[in-house]
Image (cartoon, rainbow, N blue to C red):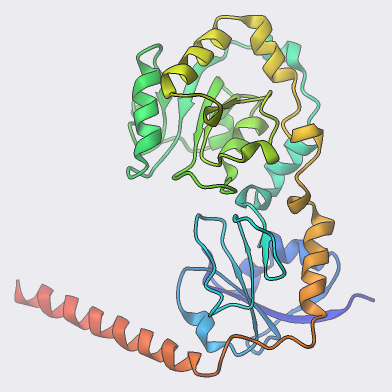
Length: 314
């Protein structure tokens, strides 16, 4: 019989309703070992950065983010995030692990390289919606001088429409510009994973320690080059050399052909077991946090009233 654990999930990117919570990847992983009860009076709360509702909970708080954010250990007891080092309170769990379908494709992939080589694939794609990520926009313009890149997102769109099915779109290309929003050690999202799952070669920038997750013989790691000009020279070389292109496609995506230890489900479950069994934990989440929560609500409502008054005054 599975041990019973009372949990709740708040402040992530989806509504905190039971049906959405049960689709959350961490919930699915935990369900393999525990009988989870979703309740408003939990023993353990998993929460993110999208709100302050977590302050209402006087229980063990577990912060999760896939973005380049750090936990506030004055508010949480434990964290699962992108960041190193792994400690008694922090566990590195990069966002790409939560994309279960693509992760399993890459993990179990046995590419038919000959078939891929015979496909009439276009040059390179760019699929983004955030204008603030200036580094990848700069790279797009540089590489686009060599050969036109198809951009199907909101940023630099040159197709005349927005791409609906990302994975089907990526499968049409030899290369994918797989740049993170920012660069920080350990910060690896789904971008490189999706490129691998579509059998396209990622041109990657973001995590300077990405070689701990992915095999740098299978993609172009911008962090190994002195400049983007040198990166582009490599892209051009691969684009014009079928044997080199084949060599990249033939390499396994994961370093040493094994998933990183931190995204291994057994290790994730072992960390949660340590948390669930730590009966002597002195929680840093204090009851006074409820005062912070109501102050947040008051400030939010004052801001709404202020905006409404300004609108009426126009």
